[in-house]
Length: 378
Ligand SMILES: *[C@@H]1O[C@H](CO)[C@@H](O)[C@H](O)[C@H]1NC(C)=O
Ligand SMILES: *[C@@H]1O[C@H](CO)[C@@H](O)[C@H](O)[C@H]1NC(C)=O
Image (cartoon, rainbow, N blue to C red; front, side):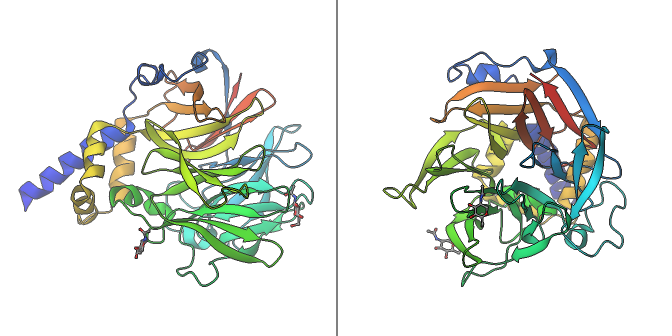
């Protein structure tokens, strides 16, 4: 028993190191890179602190260019007021606020307080659509307040959403495309989605005409970031466990078919269009050799999950103990080639990143666990 325990600890630590270790990205990627890699540590960096919460997971700017807005760990959606240089409270996804905003890394209140992840504005109406990991799909008007629930399940397709994650809106008819990362594990157990080889994630669409949700793709391995292409012909979807980006066609001649758009050397999180063309993909961490072993032998991951302690807790303690990793993202072309690599190894601040949103020559960088939003001036 004791040997087994020690062995699993060793595997866990090695998997952790493999999951987090920063190796030089360039050596693996140069063959695909068209432009030169970005030297991020030469850019001007600013950490914009967040009071009383952590983890600005994604960003959205309103139709007037205000913001960004971001969802944080205590369930609030906050708005950056550039003129006053501070965040103001904008909206919440749960009317229940009792006990919200406790210790910073306590995720035990998330299911009550909400954890807003994906955010996008309808640019005509100014309504903000929200994918909340626990509350499902919601919307809130331009004045903010308590968001209204739009959907928590798909028509005739149980179960209810378990881990709603990312969304995008089709400007032609207001249809919302969004991901539910797992039907088994909640956000606070996101590592279990990967370790167990879970394949219960779904890509869905919400039609504002009939207010119904339909399932477009299921049996996905941790579907995560969702973005519509510039021309509206397809959706890109990050499939985190498989380290790849899928392309799902909307254009009538190919509608409903999908293919691999890009294979990545790490675990992708959110995707956003870049105003300079292509798509920014935030990479949570690299796919190391030991993790590769765990992923190709599901029994190892499942054994880890059966251990008599909370794997997320162990992971976050290890994360603190091991220190930080680097911030890593890639900009992909419309063909899925890497155009640009963003990497900041020089600042020991980032453990991982979740989002890159480019706006007016700045990159806003989000994460699930840091107490600030990062801004890099290009
Ligand atoms: C905004 O929502 C309306 C109503 O659902 C829809 O008709 C319109 O296409 C949407 N516009 C954008 C830009 O998303
Ligand atoms: C999808 O998953 C369900 C339940 O897990 C399974 O019954 C079904 O065969 C799977 N479908 C495909 C295409 O793999």
